[in-house]
Each structure stands twice: as C-alpha cells, then as structure tokens.
Length: 371
Ligand code: MG
Image 1: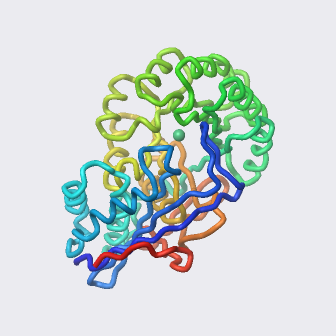
Image 2: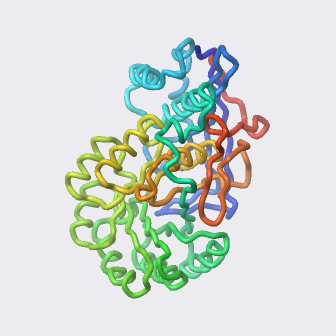
Image 3: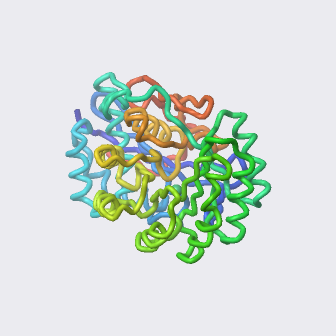
C-alpha cells in the first residue's frame, strides 16, 4: 500500500458556551487542522491536531500546517501501514515538533484499522474497558457562575469536574471552595491551574484547600500549578494534595524523570504533545508499567481527535484511565460523523474499523494538497 495524496483542511471550532477560559487565557474558538491520507488502494485515513490557541503549549495551528508542508511531499509513496517507519521518516525530515506529526500518525492508524477491519482500540491493546470515564470542564469565570454549572453538568451525568483556575490565587481559592460546596461526596474536583500560578501563589492555594476533601468528601486533585517542572516539584514537596502533572510531561524522558522524583501521582497524557497515537501509546504503556494513572486526552479537537482519545482510553486498563475529555461536546459545529457517543458522563467509541469517523468535507476549508 502506498500514500498517493495528503490533503490538509482547517476549521474553526466555536465554543458552545461562548468562550473557553483557563489560567489567564480565554478564546471563543479554536483553529483545528484535519489531514486526509489517501492511498493507492482506495482507503483514506483521517487525523486531526488542534493546539489550544497559540499561547498555551509550544504549538500553534499554522505551525501544524507549516510543519506538514515539510513532511507531506516526502511521505508520498510510503506505506502508511508501517507506522513506526512513517514516524522514523517524519523524525528524519523534521527534528522535534511532535504535534506537527500527530495528525499524520493518527491518519495512518486509521488506515491500519481499515486495512485490518478492526477498531483502533483492538490494535492499541484491546478493549480493556467498555466505557470511558469523562470529566466536564468548568471554564474559568466568577466563582458563583462556576458553582452554578455543577448541577447542570451533573444532570448530564458527569461526576468528575475539571475546574479551571490559575489566575488570581485569592479568587481561585473562592472558586474552588464554591464549586466544592456545589458538589456531592465522591465527585471529583480537579483544580487545574494550567501553569498559571507562581510558586508562592500555588502554595497559598494548596494550603487554603488542604482540608477540603476531608470536610466535603469530594475527591480533590491539584493539577500543574506552575509553568516549570522545578516549580511544580517544589510545590509538590509542600502539599499532600493528589498531584497531577500535565504541561511539563512532554516526552518519555520527562515522564521518567518525574516518576523518579516522585513528582506526581498522575499525569495528563495529551496525544499531540507526544507526536500522535504511536508515541502516546508508548507513554501510556510505560505509565501502566510504572503504576501511574492518566487523564487520556489531547490539547483540543473535534470528533476526530475525540475518537482517537476514546480508542486509546478504551485500550487502557480502567484503573489507569482516570478521566478523558469528549472535546466535540464543547463545539457548535461538527467536522466528522461517527464520533464517540457520550452518555451519563462516559463515552464509547465506534466499533467500525479504524477511528470509526468520517470527515464532513463541507465543514472543512481546504488548505493544501500534496501528491
Ligand atoms: Mg491540565
């Protein structure tokens, strides 16, 4: 099998709730890139990469497309089912920039699934859980408005909430307390600062919420308080809150170092940050071997990214998949059919071959074509 054409599209994903705010950032829509990899056997694979705006991770939407312009012409004629070989070739053509490679890698997995007639969760390790536990993001807003979202999201079936903080620490303390008051015992409050605090601010918040889980019976976690690994490690040394690292876990080396340092209890595994499903699966399997549970997800995306997340999460042992995100639930537009179905705070991927999604070309703007 040979790649004959790589087509690149883009779309804006506008937020249902008007905007999405985290740390000190806020956006009304996210620019996503969709890649179609066509083959000489009539099978086409699809992949997606959506950085969460240009100022969140070292990744941006135009960068995805600029990077693909370096890779795509030289992938024509390659066999997309030899996925490690495709990754070797991409690494030889472009040093670093893992997020650029993610959509192409994802599309090659989709092709492999279609060729073998198997859903991706089978190829990624097997159906280790029938349903994938989701969290719902509580976007940063006034404390009362954030708390008001909880009964609404609970009515949709959610029991795990990722509460966006990382702005002003005094207000963040009120946000976390107000949301906790709206929650029921055993529900998850994942206070995610997305790197937004300085070290002293993170300690101020950690100290102010130290007894909240005991007082309320909720399950409280504290996620990526500061920008650098070293700052997070210093905060971790001074709190007993279950600790999640996200943004600074960007490679296997970073993961191994953090595990050696006992720097976290869980990680947030984002597919595109590792460079696609191939490398994310490697990190996932390492986490399972190390005994580290994960949030299995990506930076952002529509139906295609969510399908990739769902397949990776389905093939992760349930004790190690703490929560995932169904990003297509947050957007006003649909860019593919066949997305994972969301029900009662869980999602289930299609059991069709590959990712099980079909792009809606009318919803996508063509950007480039490489033959
Ligand atoms: Mg996070």
